[in-house]
Image 1 (tube, one colour):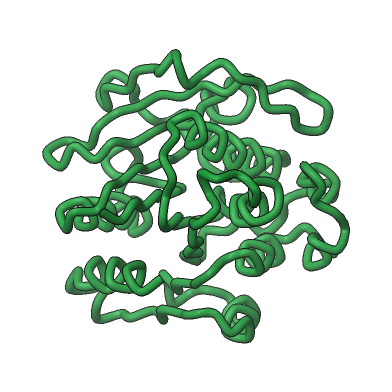
Image 2 (cartoon, helix red, strand yellow; image 1 turned 90 degrees about the vertical axis):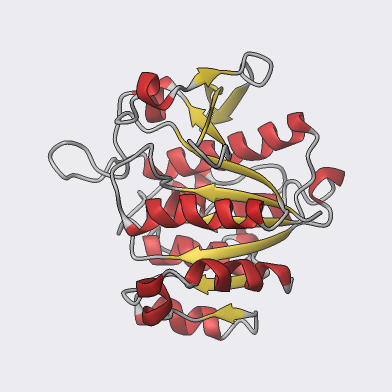
Length: 267
């Protein structure tokens, strides 16, 4: 039985309907119905209604501190099950980064200046929680900007961990990436032996460059939108990795769900 770990920026029905949220629900549901073992993670954004979504904290997984830029940030893990399909969703929460805040922008439409730190915390929170679960995924699917630090950490900082030794990373790209991540991202992202040579593509802390960094440490790439910057598409196509191109007709009729899962099966 193939084990697939989905790392989502958005998942329906916990956030407002969007193409990314719909995909974050539909693709894991089909994989589960096809006999795969599934785990799904996403941030516990501040606009998620915990009572309506029936989220509850998992004390045995919560409690560790993640240090970013010299500051401790407590990791809180909550869990819920998507109605009907019962796909389990784990929520990464933290008072500083997620509990009282939206996705990438504040109520005035301004980018949060610490979005880079939020992505770092999320990536490490997911990886540490999967280790605690003692659940070794065959495929890790990264959907959306909040997951873009994870491939680097998986392939560098966690490369010797037996839980992840056979994991393949699929990077799904969309047009959701914030334009900027702050000047200090390159310094903050360093962890467990990650050096300058690993971060050369972050010469500027832009969303496109962070997506390029994620692509550098992925095993396959999905273009999930027709609005991905051409610069990023050209870069990814030049890496020599398996690529699933965007298919407008499949997105329209829903057959992309099967296409995605067939693509994962080939890895």
